[in-house]
Amino acid sequence: MTTFIVAFVVFIVAHALPPRPPIRGYLVARLGERGFQLAYSVASLALLGWLILAAIAAPYVELWPPAVWHMHLALALMPFAFVFMAVGFGVPNPLSISLFPEPDNWSRSGLLTVIRHPVQVGLALWAGLHALANGTLVSLLLFGGLALFAIAGIPLVERRRRREIGADAYAAIAHRRTAYNDAPRQALAAVFGLVTMAVLLYLHPYLFGADPLAWLPL
Image (cartoon, rainbow, N blue to C red; front, side):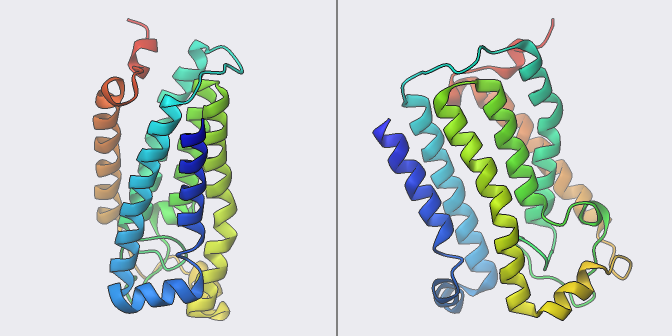
């Protein structure tokens, strides 16, 4: 349990400090905006992997017994979580988290007209479904904490983006939906998200010791 707690604290600190204006400014000056976002994302995934491995090794304390509908719900909704995160990272979005700088004529289109912060929403959905399907103390702390972290991060991201581009500009582009159409790019990102989910689903028994597909009726 100690390793899990340490990994969780490091994960939170690593996400809380880099976005702070002095630290972020220092890193962006040396890596560039895209380089910072890419490095931040890679580090986040690496720390998330360490956190999940620490959770697997932690003591097993069951809070509720697993039920078939838990896994069925997770399998049914998980594609949405991966699509949200893939589109969020892969499509320009000056309103939220993205790996790509926004074009001058950017406006919300496709998924972004419905969800302003797809990365955070996708992460919260992914984490919440895992917490439900596992039903253990460690999974509740891990995935429940990640879900809360993702949702709590939305106002922080909005505050930072308003500071960077100005409150008036933020409000203006938040309501602009017609000047730019990136449907092909969003579709490609969505396909990438689904392929990533399929690969992880196949590798799930080998990486995490549990096969979600075993719960499906034959």
